[in-house]
Amino acid sequence: MACTPIGQASASMLQGRQAASRRRRMTKPNASALDQLTLDDVRAAHARIGDAVVRTPMLKSQTLSQIAGAEIWLKFENLQFTAAYKERGALNALLLMSEEARARGVIAASAGNHSQGLSYHGSRLGVPVTIVMPRTTPAVKVMQTEAVGGDVVLEGDSFDEAYAHARQLEKERGLTFVHPFDDPNVAAGAGTVALEMLEDKPDLDCLVVPIGGGGLMSGMATVAKAINPDIHMVGVEASLFPSMHNVLSGADNPTGGDTLAEGIAVKEPGQFTRAIIAERVDEILLVGEPDLEHTVALLLQIEKTVVEGAGAAGLAAVLANKEKFAGKKIGLPLCGGNIDSRLLATVLLRDLARQGRLARLRIALKDQPGALHKVVSLFERHNVNIIEVYHQRVFTKLPAKGLITEIECEARNKEQVDALIADMRQTGYDVHSVELA
Image (cartoon, rainbow, N blue to C red; front, side, top):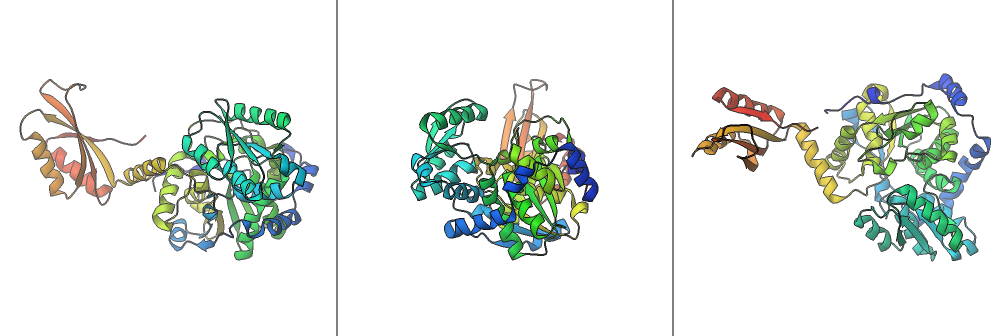
């Protein structure tokens, strides 16, 4: 796997007693926050939401275990009805509201899985749900939310503007705001994921959990540490959005950018969740974009399951830190599977290119009859399949009688393409492989 070691772009907040002591100095434990989220709260949430959410399977992946050098246990939360764990917290919050509050309705600001989970269960329970989304939200997400019963309001050009408008509508209409992560009831619902994982596999050594705002990790860490204080809790953030890591370590890494893991692309983590994570999580790792892309493709190829970037973050961290996790029994929640089909296609093709199974070769040719035929014959000699051919005569530094040809091709592996390139150069062609950024 061609990847940048996460250790170079991430930070571990130490381990054991030394780490706990340091975290307490960095962030004072918020006793009231810790009291608001307990194992009993999560167990009560699990009984409350009952069969209204899917008891998703947790399975050992033999192939991924071989690749990682550890036991990999996958919790398939992408098999929920709305394809994400967010249903659990949204439903728990709805069921804990008074009948009066439910009758008035609820509101949230979200362009992601929370909007669908809240809309679906609100509609099922007869609770009016308003979701405020930025005007820049892709149409498919708007349609998905409306399809499960949400009333979508488009406002603002950013999440912050949509959030501000949602809080305004909350006051004007007397609605109840349901936060996507910074809420004890939502976090308790999310924690039921860990409860099920440890029921299915009690001897897990560690849980590796994506962190955005921190709701999922807060709930899961609360459960895991209460059941087994020695279990190792590892959080994972996209390296472009190291917000929780920054808060807890005192670092000032830049936050922002286009990440595949938009589900955990949070600039400001929750106040409640950061207090829980500071006390109950052992370390946070950061994962880069190539690792996320590779892992999304790997899960589809090996497990035949569609996972969004945020859902793949945990496995990406494990695969890029094999020495850290070697020999351990690791639980990984695949927390969501809502990825745009066009984006998924791009991720898969880019992964094939990184493996060397797809390539684009840029070749300088003479603009004369038979030139292209001679090049094509070399592809045939090496049994490399041509997919597309592009000619460029104008925008080139070559003489007027020259041209640039780019040929996209597919092969068994990188070695087969390298052999073709070597043969072409030996024949006298000026050829270069177009590399991915």
